[in-house]
Structures are given as structure tokens and as C-alpha cells.
Length: 153
Image 1 (cartoon, helix red, strand yellow):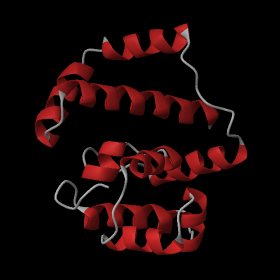
Image 2 (cartoon, rainbow, N blue to C red; image 1 turned 120 degrees about the horizontal axis):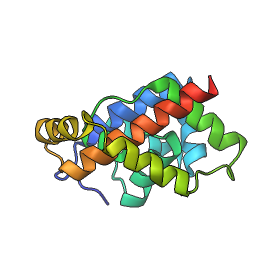
Image 3 (cartoon, helix red, strand yellow; image 1 turned 90 degrees about the vertical axis):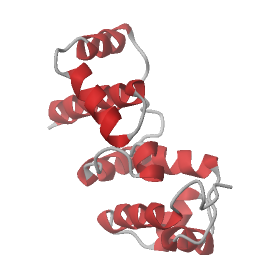
């Protein structure tokens, strides 16, 4: 279990509630989607329940939010409109997962080589107290996600 001395469970609960409110879902619906009891989910939202690492990862993946933001509040608050799209996509097609292709690898390299990315990653790492590589990965992921959203619009 993730203990409160490692994570601020109250803050995690606030972030979960913000996601739930944006999705216009009840605690019962959220618990059902996540495969946990209503009691457990309710306790998560108010910060008195424990959370396994597996549940933290599952929450992050299910809602398409960075785990660093969900568990630690690191980085910018995710765009809640993309969370709704992520959940809708998960519900409609569980097999439509991105695969690593040569094109994706080339795109990642292209983004990393952009002049403004490395200094920005360094600044984010210093400001949020995360590693440089984690900040760089977050930037690349968000840039790719933004391009995908633009392409679909």
C-alpha cells in the first residue's frame, strides 16, 4: 500500500475528484470502471484509504494522466478535455493501443532535437524537482498527444 507518509493522499483524492467531476460520473461509476468497491473509491477521494502501486498505475492509464501528476502533483494539470477523450477511447476500443513504430521513434528524436525542448525540460526538472529525463519524456509525450488531437480535430 502507498502510505500517507510517502504521498499526500488528500491531494491525490482531490485530483481524483476533479477528474470524476469533469467526467460527470458518480463515485459508484468510477469504482465500477476501476474494479474496486465504492467504499474503497470513496476513501481514496477523501484521502483516508490506502492505494497500491498497481491501482495508481491503473488510474493513470485509465484516465490518461501522467502518474507523476496524479500521485505527486508534478507537472501541469492535464487538459481535462483530453481525459474525457482518453476514457471514451478506452471504453470504445480497448484494442486501439499505440504501437512503437519507426515513424514514432523518428518523431520522438525529432522532438528531442528541437532547440527549445532541452532547456525547457531542464527548467521543468529544476522547478518540479523531478529528473531531467522524466521532464523530457513528459514534454515529448505531451507534444505527441497534442499533435494527435490536432490531427483528429
